[in-house]
Image (cartoon, rainbow, N blue to C red; front, side, top):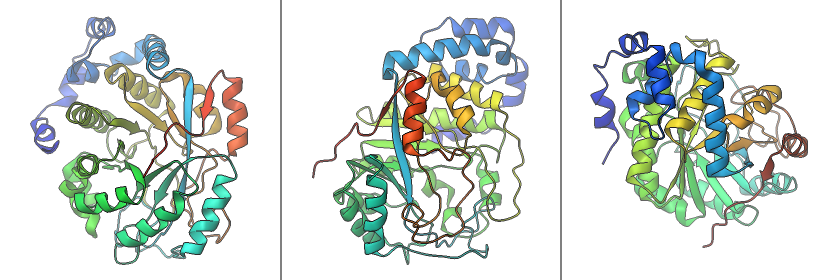
Length: 368
């Protein structure tokens, strides 16, 4: 099984023509429906649908409360290594960038875990660069064997693996996978990834499914907003999520909406993504995929995250740091990208409660 054949069906689809042809009647008709088709969803991504954002927002809020309640799951990223073999044009870890490189020792992993666990967080997202000769699967597995003593849920956001490699990490306590396709345009993908193992578009595209086949309970996908026209990437991201939900009904599928942030290097995104566009894509996603999780990270400002909270968000990062060893201040390296929301876990907890939401520090326990 693979999402790729479905994606290829839209290769010759004239999305611009379709979006330009959407009228008020089309949008109103979609908003009256309780279950949307893929083209219904695309209608909600049109310029005409911008006139209906308030109605979309109200309906998205109702669906979110109905399916998730007024709760937000907290997690934080933990970087194990920033060594990388890739030359991704948009990434601070690009192997051609002159930055200090570091990989945590197992003792340093324990120190990071202790520092993070003191905040009360029980969900952690483990990240590395793409350097499997250094941050090997065995090394990551050893790290996770330490981390499971501190956290009830361990997710990974690392380089794409085989099913057998994912199974090794699942046995080490990993229960969730986050992996972004970055852009679903295969042609653009090749341009943005000129060298390195990440250049293999298909291998990365099928990684979420391999993770689910390895018995991960949760998979998060997304596109890096700003690399391509957002309508195209959000449309295909949603179709990918819908495919995974249908094929793996027992799994939790979520979508992240990461917007380009400043990073080491000179790359500038080809497209500017406005706050209004984020609101439109988030509310449209909720109407199309009522049961999908939606993650908004500290790439976004505190004010903006507070404002969009009610529109479909189910998961937020807190107390984030994008450098290796940053939580315990083992080093002061350049991070993968700049963080916009620098609130501590405690500050975010207070803020969410004031807005009528309950932050969740733990909603899953991986039992081995």
